[in-house]
Every structure is written in C-alpha cells, then in structure tokens.
Image (cartoon, rainbow, N blue to C red; front, top):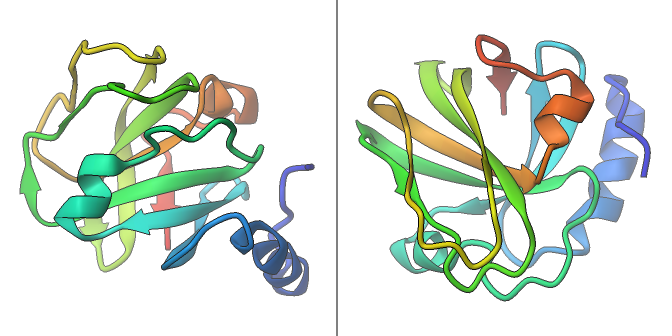
Length: 144
C-alpha cells in the first residue's frame, strides 16, 4: 500500500481499509512530514502485554500505539513476536501531540529489552525499518 496522503478524504478512505485488519480502537497518526499510519491502540494492560505477539504480518502503514496516562521508563521486548519491528518512543508535548525522542529496531522473538532514553508516555511499533524508509526521525512531531 502507498504512503497515505494528508488529504482528509483520502485518509478517511484508507483508514477504513486499514482498520479492517484490527479489532478494537484504532487511530490515524499524522507525522510532521505528512506521513500517516493507522495504529491499533493498546490501552489496557492485557493489550499492552500482548502487543503484536503471534501476528504473522503487519500492513505497510499499520502499527500499534502503546499509550500510558503518566510518563514512564518504558521498555519493550519481542517475546513471541514473529515479525521484525521498529519502535519510536514518544514524549508528549500536548494533548495527542508528541515528539519522537528515540527510534530502535527490534528482532523477532528476542528477549532483549528496548528502553526509552527518558520518561515517555507512548511507544509506536511498526514494521522494521518503516521509520527510516519514510524519512521519519528523532525530533519529528506526531499527532493523533
């Protein structure tokens, strides 16, 4: 699937198409570069613990947003995760607005902990290398 444009109409159409692959709450995340990703929200502790475990594939512009009520020293591992992922740690700068403070690549089934470099309120997991391919980098803004 192509990278979504920033037009509202096209984003809504693509959101409906992408949303079919997820159960539960989803959100379109808009990067300052104009890139858009459709993310499943991991809001409950059960959803956060399971994450993307056992998933055999992930759409090109799909992901999972782990959002917490308070800033914390977030860390993630890839236990039982079958596909390689990348994660962006996001520091809030306002309601549903944040700044990427770190991006890390993660390997399938690894128990290595990937830690945020500072207290953050969110982590966004996407396909391995997605951030680099889209030109998304540390310091970029993200809105949802």
